[in-house]
Length: 286
Image (cartoon, rainbow, N blue to C red):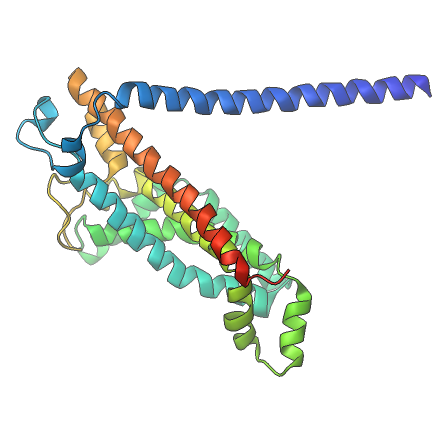
């Protein structure tokens, strides 16, 4: 008994050490990334970068900013998330309300999981081939569509898992009162799981605004402000990539400043989702 007790405690100590080591690696990596971005990007960050578009010679170290990339990223990610929500929310509600734990529900969830794991560059290549087939050029609309395809499995599966956490008693009570399954989905499920659904939406938005590979060929890049759905548009991830590939130190510092802006936007979205979810929790029946 003593040997078994000692062996169990040895294994427990080993796994505790591995957990602490994993936490240290993750926290250390995050701290290193943030330190690199802040230490190199903050000195180059200025009001002009936030309020101006690139001027002549910007990529040679002269004046200008990345307002075009900031607005382009917000437009693309916002439009892509809206398209993904319009498609993904009905899928998630149908999965829970009609398919449930059936075989078809299992295969639909499996397909969404596979789509979630596909690299974003594959979505970009698919979107580029599709745009060539219909004669569409790189544009804001193309970027929105590809980001919607990228975010759709993330958004749908996240909402599906959140909806599945809802107590079955609420659904059964609504059905017992004579409600149809559609009414249950729209008036009970959506209202009950609203905080989680909002969190899933903002999670997908954060994923879309930080992606570069999927919009490289579908949205293009331009130094102008976005004015049309059918014109090319800049984005912050591509602004970081293009500026960092320049041989001029001044431009490379601006790349880190653009990365800092992107990080702050994602951080603001994360904090906003937590605050909004807390405000919406009053609609949840516990």
